[in-house]
Amino acid sequence: MAAILKQYFPSAKIGFIGRAYTRPVILACEYVDEFIDREDFLTDKTTICGQVPDTIIHVFPDAAIAIKALKLGVKLRIGTTNRIYHWGTCNKLVKLSRRNSDLHEAQLNLKLLEPFGYGVDLSLKEIGRLFGLTKWQTLPQRFNALLHNNKYNLILHPKSQGSAREWGLDNFISLIRQLDKRAYYIFISGTVNERALLQPLFDAVGNDVTDITGQMNLAEFISFIAHADGLLANSTGPLHIAAALGKDAFGIYPPMRPIHPGRWAPIGDNAKVFVLDKFCTDCKKAPALCHCIKEINPALITTMLDQRLTVQ
Image (tube, rainbow, N blue to C red; front, side):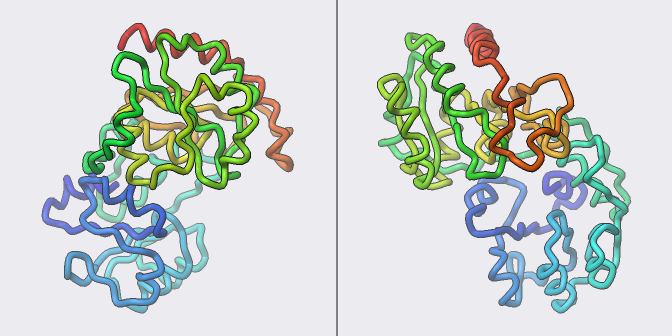
């Protein structure tokens, strides 16, 4: 969205409101001029590059932000008809229903540009070339030294902090055992809090992987992904970052709306998803018991990785 706005309004200054942990991702984007911490927006008088904002687009619905934008006197306030609080806080409403849509989340977001007179209907391939994550920081030497010069550097990100259905450690262990260590150099990533949950994996295949869990902040991890060759994960932030950076991004998904890949697949020229060709809601009330995602065969992913390796 920021890239498209810059195309139509080259002199516009774009600020991105987000929670503090997202700052490194936004600062890496060439189309965003300033990151605005959500808490600062709610408590301070916000400016963008020293100018009072005249437009706000509520891409992610947040009642507190909508109320504050109204109080600040932002002239153009764009929201959706599905949020009742937008009726009183926004002066431009877009009819948009996400739950039952067949569009990807990124395509749904672009619908919010309609008040500008631009009916933006882009393919996922076109969207995948608009991320602009070009401003990632220099990778510290201690992390750069971990990468192997003559092997395919593959990051496996097994956990999701509870935000997604998970393939399971047994499947990741099986995959690691199948991959040819003469061709692949494998990293295991995750947060500090996930390190203990990953211990069974390290107990099983610790000699075949390099543990980088909790060792990097997000800015460093973005840079590390940019230097690696590929990343395999459940539906998580690192997967989408890898795809946006143009890396091989392999996502593992369940076949259930609204968390299926049709809505949340990674977008990029080198992104691919693995999902069973079926419809299932068995795990709707018990995410940890998602058998559909666990039934995806590690051998299938091994074959795909080997095929990708031959064209590197």
